[in-house]
Length: 110
Image (cartoon, rainbow, N blue to C red; front, side):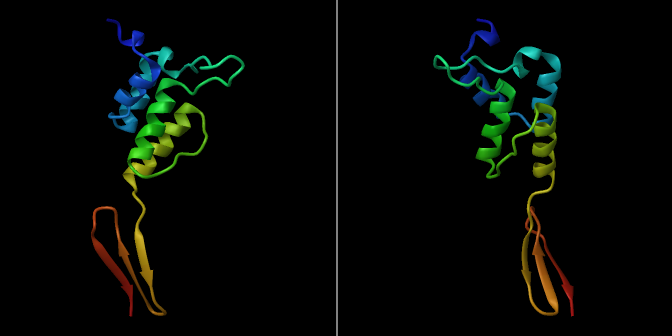
């Protein structure tokens, strides 16, 4: 059974298991992955491409939201977010504490 004969939503779920960099590489391999999907209903809007759906699923599963961007910029946004997870911050009048994405504590101030 050819890979592209699978339903688009199933392919997107499979590809969502890959890193954003690997999803970007899949886009470079085949234009079929980056083309918009036909609408599910008559007169409906075109569905996002399989790879855009995969990136959106991955973001949802990892707890962040991606902006609406062209595919290449969407890949970049996902890679940037996963490389730099948001830090937690607590601040006082003269002192600040930060907890990075890996759980390390940093402090500054007097």
